[in-house]
Image (cartoon, rainbow, N blue to C red):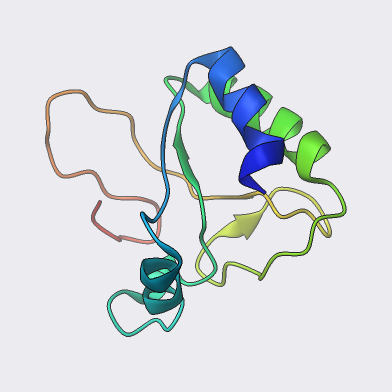
Length: 105
């Protein structure tokens, strides 16, 4: 998944995060620490809505056909896509941001 996604992420020079180890990924996927993290491997932080749409389209294309769990808290980009998204606000001031589900980030 990362090998397929990394060229796109570098091309857009976008910020992203992923667990630092497989053990941490396994812990996150248990849902014990935060249910909203279940199924996530890679989180991308686009700079704008337009960039988010472009990234989703491109990441969907380069990861098409790869196996991945469904992310229960987020919306799927397209049917059978491994790309999921969540609505939220963009802020550079360090304020608490809430998505449409009321979840603080």
